[in-house]
Image (cartoon, rainbow, N blue to C red; front, side, top):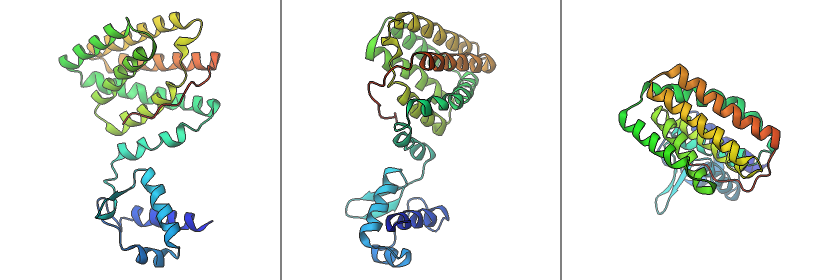
Length: 233
C-alpha cells in the first residue's frame, strides 16, 4: 500500500469512527501528517480523493471540513465508477434497478397528489410528441419526478446514477427505434395509470416491466455508447 493509500484510508477511518463529525473542521495539516505518518503531498492527494467522493469540502480561507455526509451526495459520487463500467458490467445493474424502480413507484403511488398527477400527465403528453435529445430529457424528467415523489432522496439519487449511464445508449436511434419509443411511451402510461389509481402494487409491477423491457433492448442490440452523461444531482 502506498503513502497516498495510507493517507486516504487513515482519513477515512477517522471520519467513519466519528472522531471527525459532519461539518467539523480538520486538524492542522502537520498534525494529520504526523499521526498518519505521511507527507503533506500524500495527505493533500488523499483529501482531493475524498473530496471527489463528496466526503470532504474545502472552504476558501477557512480550511478543510468533513462534508454534511448526506447519503444522496455520497451516493451521487457512484457515477464516477458506474460510468467506467464496460457494457456487460453495467447491464448487471439492471437487476438492482428493477427492484429499486419498483419500490420507488410503489412509494410514489402511496404519496400521489393531484398536483403531481397533473405534472406527470403533462410531461407524458409532451414526451409522446417529442424525439431525440429533448425526448430523452423528458423521459428522464418523468422518472425523476416519480422518484422524488417517493420521498427518499438517497434512492432517487442512486436511480439517477443508473439512469444517466443508460442514457448513453440511445436505443431509439436504432432502425427499430420508432417502434421501441411507442412501446416505451405505452409503458409510461401504464405507470401513470397505476399512480393515478394510488395502487402501489400495480405501480411497482408497471415500473419493473418498463425497466425489464429496456434491459431486454440493451441486451439484444448492444448499441454503442455515444457518450456517458454526468449523473443528475
